[in-house]
Amino acid sequence: MLSAFSSPDLKDKPGATGSLRAIIILQILGWIFLPVYLAGGVFTMPDYMKKRLGGQRIQMYIAFLSLLLYIFTKISVDLFSGALFIQEALGWNLYPSIMSLLLITAIYTVTGGLAAVIYTDTVQAFIMLGGAAYLCVMSEYDTV
Image (cartoon, rainbow, N blue to C red):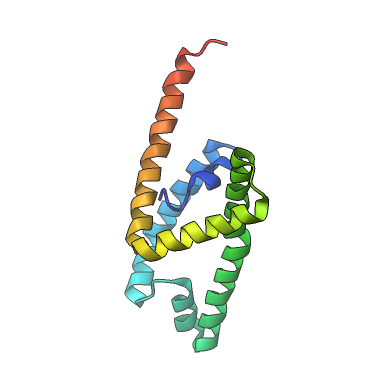
């Protein structure tokens, strides 16, 4: 659940209650629909669309559309925000910062594979939870 709601997703929401409601609704929907999907032998949306509507074209169309939308919405924003941080912190130009982020990410993913990404997500989840707990405790002692 933490990978579905990463820190950019949580910080961009208008409040914590919206994120908590989304987590609860996703779990309820998973509890209702997961047995149906598992019984049908589908695990992804393109698989479901192929079984429901038939044909290979709809499966390829949905997979291509999902990938394209993911690239233009999430990956581009993540690259820009990381490059903006590098630009402010190190004084680099924006485009070399983006290229260095792409290169580092490609090397990290190819050499470590999916296991490295999973371990990094796990460590980041503990860091986020620890930071949130620290901020909660420190906010109690801060008297402005």
